[in-house]
Amino acid sequence: MGKMPGWMTAWALVAVGAGWADAQTGLIPVPPGNVKVTVEFRQAGQSLQTGTLVQGGPRGARGSAQVQPQETQRITRRNVGSFLLIQDGGEGSITVADQVAEVVWFQQYALGRNYIAPGVVFRNVGTSFVVRPTILPNRQVRLRITPQLSYRSDTGTGAIELVEASTEVVVPSGQSITIGGSEGSAEVVRQFLLGYERANRASQVSIVLTAETP
Image (cartoon, rainbow, N blue to C red):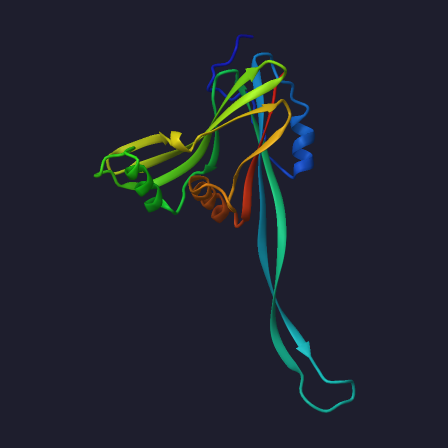
């Protein structure tokens, strides 16, 4: 079998629950000349439960019961995992949100950095990260991670890599790194994750990548 093009994803797996995802992705061997990049969206969300509390006096006492509405919040945590097989020196794409609500923010950002002309008006915006791995000696991997937005405007569609917001790291094979989190992250990454959080009713989302070589 010949080598895959650099842009091609050979396998795709989506799993809910970190333990299951780790067990399943660990069964997939990494072909020579490729890097397996495991992607995990870690999120915490709140679910609201509404009920009624009836309070009465001591048994046998006279009087009326009090009925009070009660609301409780429950914190739920969920990990959603997938992975890509990317050829050494190629690229893969991690979709964050197909459509975000903060269209104006992204238009102003792109306009302020001369990615678009003043007359271009975004109608829809989607967000993703482009991952470019390079295999290094001693089982190390260089990862270049670039935020990318895709848009639809009145004049057509397009995609923009926000190169000024790129991150490049060198990690040992199998070591995880966090590339995003809605708390304390750079503004571009924070805006990217807002769309994911709202679509999944989650908060405190972070994205964890793990690159593995053969």
